[in-house]
Length: 220
Ligand SMILES: Nc1ncnc2c1ncn2[C@@H]1O[C@H](COP(=O)(O)OP(=O)(O)OP(=O)(O)O)[C@@H](O)[C@H]1O
Image (cartoon, rainbow, N blue to C red):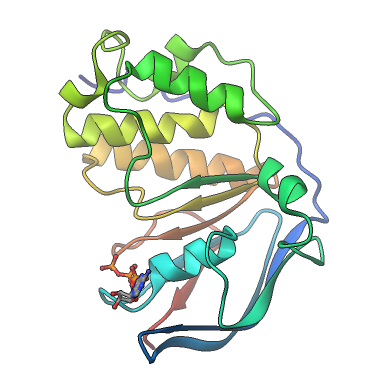
């Protein structure tokens, strides 16, 4: 099943003064320092690609940025406020898609998207069937998601990006299992998202074909 349409779908203007800042971030696992004194600011319209060998701490960093794990030292700020102090406001602006697709295998793709849309704070108006069609899953709306291929399941997960207006996307290996057409689509979304003042932090072992992308190497 091919992706049959690529069009401009993000039309939200975000607050261009918003930013994500980390200061003196440190993560220790089992007495091993994965990273130390990590500092950066991501502003509206910017993309950050985290690169590093297996086990270098990319997922650990993303989980810290999401507030799911506490750093051993340092702080993550959203709009200059510690994310731990403004969790609901922060999560209203965040979509996190982790390593696992985060979808319910027994539900259909449509049911999964309905749940994701209901949980977001700023839902878009895109019909769910249209969101699925955008990721090439027209005709797969009502099958159990577990019967889909790995790449198709990843597409269902990524379709969540169309359902809510969240300024910050945090994506762990979003291109895993995707074919070239789907990779191109997601790069296109990232580009559009950044142009609208969105921002994204993502891990990938491959170069990303998007402008305004900064590379952060964890094992440099
Ligand atoms: N909850 C945990 N408890 C103990 N150690 C952990 C935990 N989570 C991760 N680690 C360890 O931290 C290290 C970094 O893991 P992480 O998943 O962040 O790496 P990664 O850079 O994302 O790797 P990959 O490229 O393989 O996905 C690994 O050695 C891992 O075993």
